[in-house]
Image 1: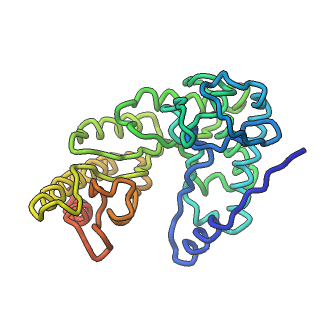
Image 2: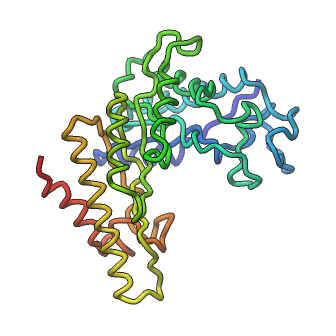
Length: 314
């Protein structure tokens, strides 16, 4: 039997630093259709250079569904065991077990090839491999008496556009069946990736939070940044200021919605901004964060973000 070795070198550096400084960590993400290594889904954990052009190519290379359930459990439970054995159960507050399943696609690109589809076929709201991942994580934490320590979260983008699909998927994970025989709440809630733009309506965002609250989900704002224009080295001071002010206004709107819904009882447990400075952002030219080139370069967005809380009236 081949059992892969999992390296925790970088993980331990982050966890150690967080623990020493009293910081909380959210783990993201063991299962993601987009960038899962091919060998995790093949027989004998083999990688191939001639990658499939479609999910039906080279079926002999891929393992079967039952084997994949076993590998899923091995992987996610090994990660959780490492966290607990390392004394980090009070450092890790949440765990994005599965990321972006609702947007699963098969693309002929090396970086974003969806090998899950080679075994399990097209996307389904009743996906057994998504459910299996959450069941395995839940059962391990339950066995260790740590289930209340770490929230198990389904994370996705555009959740405010696909509210019904999100609710259906999570409710299916928590439904009683052969895979979840006790009907345990194996998925605690939704991670709302919030890559918002100037045209992202605050009302639509708020309606989504209200719906997730009504569904009794824990809600986490997981990847907040704001794209309201472009700032480059050639932008004038006036152009830069205009983008920054538009960015700040949207941050204020979104934070006001979050705070208002929190007061109304929504179980919003975390708000995570997707980076520190624009210089290190995945969308550098969009000036999406609270600081510019460095943390000394405080933007109006920072003040809007903070003032939304300071000036909030219940």
